[in-house]
Image (cartoon, rainbow, N blue to C red; front, side, top):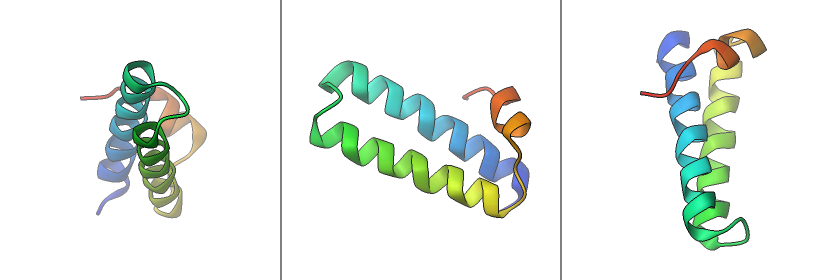
Length: 61
């Protein structure tokens, strides 16, 4: 996976987590799962060299 792909995956995962939290509530199992997926995606992006600015400037697709 390239850095660019990892950044996009992280941004998409965060957007999905936000939608899930808004739909099911912040204490739901769905929210916990979505947040973990977002954390994992951000960790992967960071390992591939993504910076705060890379993550902030990307938009979900």
